[in-house]
Length: 114
Image 1 (cartoon, rainbow, N blue to C red):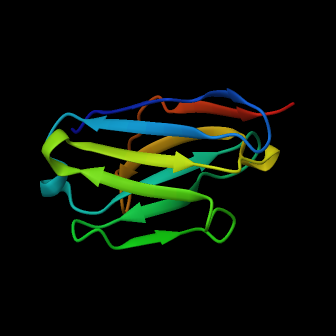
Image 2 (cartoon, rainbow, N blue to C red):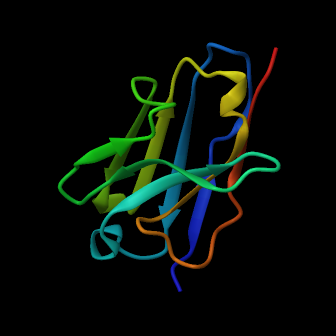
């Protein structure tokens, strides 16, 4: 079972930025496509962005143009740069394989509020 540890969340004002990081316990190159997901209270977990080993990226419409996913295979790290944050971006953010495993890490809380 791969361990995925997310970090970088916090409280930020609307319009602000955060950078999330995820470190995997084994080679993300061997895992393949990776994704960032989020879950707001009372909602289902949703895919926010994904990236392949060839650095092909895809974003949910709600974050396109504001979020950027990247990966560093040498460091087994996947990152999510989030700019122009909105209150509706408030959620717990998780990284996982795309498509996801049937288990999840702890996630990192992102709260956008004034």
